[in-house]
Length: 498
Image (cartoon, rainbow, N blue to C red):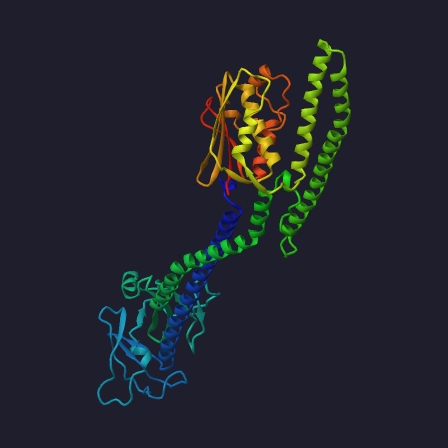
């Protein structure tokens, strides 16, 4: 199927398909890289929040007392802002002894709570097992780890699943859905137990960025493909323009104008080399054809004198059947020689005389001339004052060949009609013979072509009359064809009138 498409269309489709695949792969990689980068950034942010809160709790010597009270005291480190008081001032409420809720400091206490402890994206959980060191051998794929402060193990960042023991997955899923938040968990060791700090970071900016990117890619990629297709179509069309010019010139070159050459583009590419090769081929073809034409013309010319002498001797010889048959053969050879000479002149492009010719008078004179079959009646219907521009001798030969052909194949009558139709002289020559089959409407104008019906009545015809007539018609700016339907066709010549 693709082989039936033009080179221009195939090149456009191939270029568009290649760019489409490349853009698809690039878009997929871009979305994947951006999604991973933004997700890692959210995980790092969650780990940072968990680590900051864990550092505050560890630096303040946090302890969980029975009844759900979180005491923050002890030495204040660099991780704890100066606003955090050194005495136990923090009270937590943990009715289920699971989630520790930090409240405001009691009245009369100086300072304000550390912002990390009041961050809505941070939760503190109690731990039910004795404190033990937690070591991390490295983060798994999609998990980031960062070192904590004094007495704190590394922060483990997860996406939607808390890694500490004693946590309730259902509550974690409600607080931080897997597709909406990135989670990070970090334990803090105290004298009475272990606290687990869990922080979340929203993935909404990631989703917004990916949505924006997809919103740009979905209409952008088809628009870019359309632009690539249009530019490729134009570029390939411009590159193939010399090929179209070469093809058009080659289609117009015939055996009569082999001097013409195809245009050679200025670019020194494959197309230019193709044009140069075709021109060299035309040079060799023109030389071969010209030699052939010259040989035919010379041979026909050299035969004229011996044939004329032979005919004269036969005419002067003692009358007899053998002499009469020989004279008939010589006449046929002389007619063939004359036809070959005329064809050679026509093929050589001999300029025709451009003079005003009364085609009506020429037609009447040639139609009234006697022919070998006197029993065939020739009827004339000639319009007066039908003047064309051309050679009187060649037009006379055209009419004579058409009438001779019609008389040769007619049953008993031939009609020659000349009229003017739409600025053209129309010459119709009809006969009541068997007609010309539709499949032979063009073959009859080939040189040395005779139909089977013609061979029976005219064993001596060479099959050059109609070929010469068409060449003369074309040289005079006209045409010659078989008009009408199958078995009813007749010969029709058209010429522009003046």
